[in-house]
Image (tube, rainbow, N blue to C red; front, side, top):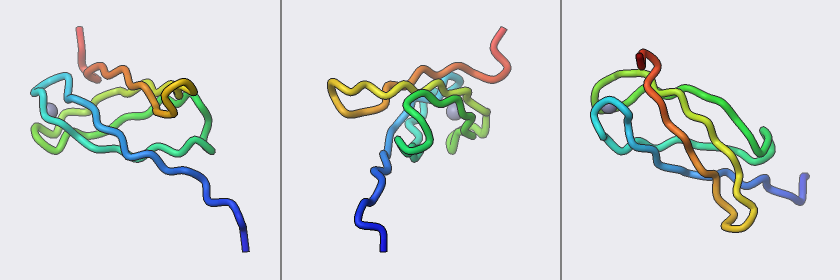
Length: 70
Ligand SMILES: [Zn+2]
């Protein structure tokens, strides 16, 4: 049995297209800087999320941009 349970973070991001709040799960064991994409539950658009772990506040900080921006 593994005595250590890696922390899983539930984080929220605001959809770049419609402003809907969406939840994503991030694991610090996957790295303290992650690039991922998530489909908005509100409008179905794909958001590109850049997550950087902030060790000062023990949370990921998210930057969101729409997949089809521009
Ligand atoms: Zn949306």
